[in-house]
Amino acid sequence: MIDAKMYALGDEPSAIRELFAYGMQRKAEIGAHNVFDYSIGNPSIPAPALVRDTILELMEEDPVTLHAYTPAAGDPSVRQTIADAISRRFGVIATPGQLYLTPGAAAALAISLKAVTNPGDEVIVISPFFPEYSTWIAMCGCVRVEVPAQVPSFQLDVPAIEAAITPKTSAIIINSPNNPVGAVYTRQNLEELAAMLLRKEEELGHPIYLVSDEPYREITYGKEVPYVPTLYPRTIVCNSYSKSLSLPGERIGYIYVADAMDDAREVITAVAGAGRALGYICAPTLLQRVIARCVDEPSDVAAYAENRALLTDGLAKLGYEYVEPDGAFYLWVKALEDDAQAFSDRAKDYELLLVPSDSFGVGGWVRLSYCIAHDTIERSLPAFAALKESYQEV
Ligand code: PLP
Image (cartoon, rainbow, N blue to C red):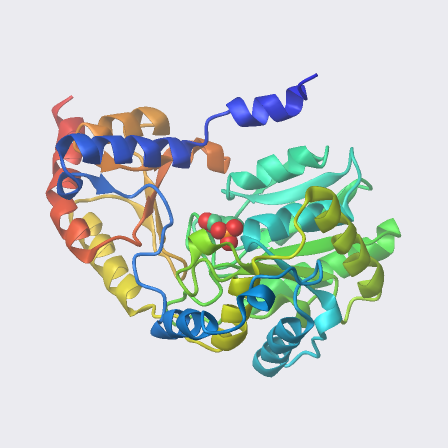
């Protein structure tokens, strides 16, 4: 018999993917040049040359071993390289045994949540949030508890998170730099969160896991992105190279269960179990090897910074309201009517593809992915002007 919950998840449209699919169809109809597609977070800059060079070099190796299975958690030497990079960069002692390689951050999040929750537990998310969190929380049979971010800073509202914690709370997901608002949580904000969580753990007598979703860690515009495990030991880092190395389709990332956690061994064992149960064993071997070579490659954020400047200046001049992003490559823009879906639908008349905010847990906004060609942004500004005018005519 079909699992009704899984059917519902399969049947439920993803606003982002639906708009992306609409965009593909529209581009086929009127030409890609004429569609201003702000729907999906596909990096617009190429992967570093070292990725290509490494793949070409690897092609010369013995294909039998090159394409073979690795241990479920990933090749030990690759995990050692990543652990060394974490230790070097963030001043922690990271060991390979605390790493589990995954096909992207999505798998890392699904595994981590499965590892540290039981059905009926509560998982706190900060709204607006990445819509897929709802899917993974539902998959675990848990309850999603939404806590709005502070407005207008979109920092964590620590007193509100504290008020939302109950004896059933097992995990909190945070995401900085943030999709969709571009906020980067400050050190002080994270320190306040950590102090509160330590107090609540003591009070409740059970662990509260902080799941730190970090695929945008490298994409910032000058702001510090503190390393969460240095502030709160019970942190599970979920990271990927999808955005930092522009490899979203290659599906490679990792879970790092902080060594400093007092139950680190138990948690990484549960992570291994969840990875096994969900079928996420042995992340793509070729990509594991590529990452080992490219672990210190810097992300090229200059193009995103230029896009950000062009888009925010352009929209500000037109009188749009938006949240100034400090990281990632998304702009959170106030819809010109309360119904974000209706606004997004009207934007389509101007060939603007803007994701409505409802599936991110709030109404009245749209998300623009500005990881697109600079020239597309430039050419889209008259369409934004016409969209705005259409509201003034009414
Ligand atoms: N978390 C956030 C906030 C994201 O925006 C994304 C992808 O866009 C993911 C997780 C999933 O990343 P990956 O493609 O590495 O699975």
